[in-house]
Image (cartoon, rainbow, N blue to C red):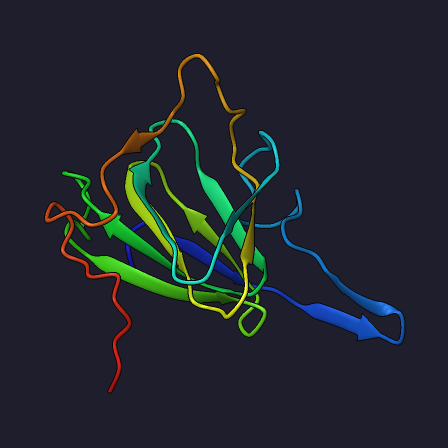
Length: 151
């Protein structure tokens, strides 16, 4: 796994009224600090990527549908430089994925309907100077092909 990436298996508590799932608590070992919470979605087959942050650690939880979240470590001083990680997360695999600074990430909706991701980053979004450094989703700079791998 890419150095600094953390995964927390989430516990779903169902009852006759519905379900409850805690995502991130301030007493979790992987909790850093709170910046804000936002929702992002993708329609079936849509890829959103690539980008990284210099100040913000992301904490992703997919609460509807399924997403393939992909990370690429391009950090010069990392022991896992050049490594790619795939995480299949959502309704069938409820996890929290913590994405460290400077690690490229993107996602693809792999469910039949819109997938919804909740992010609890450590920083507020700065509208004047966004902490987002982007490259195209389909680039040769990252050794990854977003196509489905049948077999």
